[in-house]
Amino acid sequence: MARTERTILGIDPGLANTGWGIVEQRGPRLACTAYGCVSTAKDLPLAQRLRKIHEQMAAVIARFEPACVGIETVWFGVNVQSAFATGQARGAALVACAERDLEVLEFSPSQIKLAVVGTGSAEKDQVQYMVRQLLALEDIPRPDHAADALAAAICYTTHEGFARRTGAACAAYDVPDRGVPACDASAGKDRL
Image 1: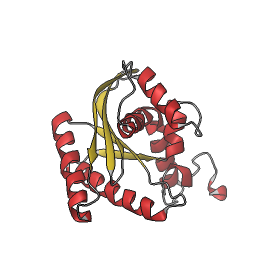
Image 2: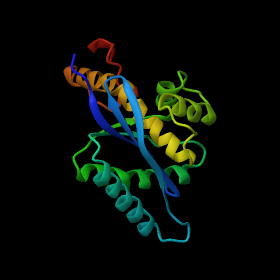
Image 3: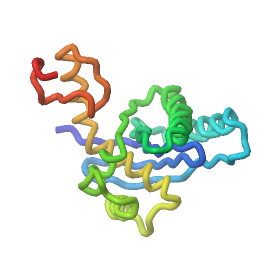
Image 4: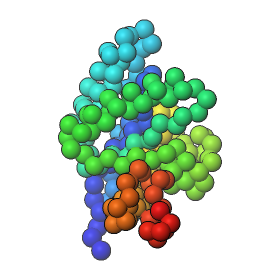
């Protein structure tokens, strides 16, 4: 089996704060290279806020040259307006990834929590603690958006094979791949 060596970008999108984290993978070992947060002011017009997210994410990509990206999907809770704003910020970050033809895998918040903590219902402080442990950091990454982005990068290393197998199974059964949760690769064609 080939040894995996690559740089992974994790993104935790948000209009006010888009967290990013760079994780180096060398075989089974993971190490944090850098992390940060793109913050935008509420008083800026929406287009300017999105441009800032796009430009700063493009600068992170140019500097660290990741091979792939793990990004959190938008969670539609009670506040739909907030989810819509997060979706726009996510789009700005995704355009920066597309400009470099990066492979992007999307993960729900529960998938990220499961990959990092072992349960999809973990609390934020549990995720932060495990990110610190898994990456052997002296302190918990701050702000919390950066810790969440590092968690998305860690999730990429644990879910990528499953995501590819699921997508391949959907294609084999001529079923549209709507993401990992929507297509059960273990099911037979008659059950899809």
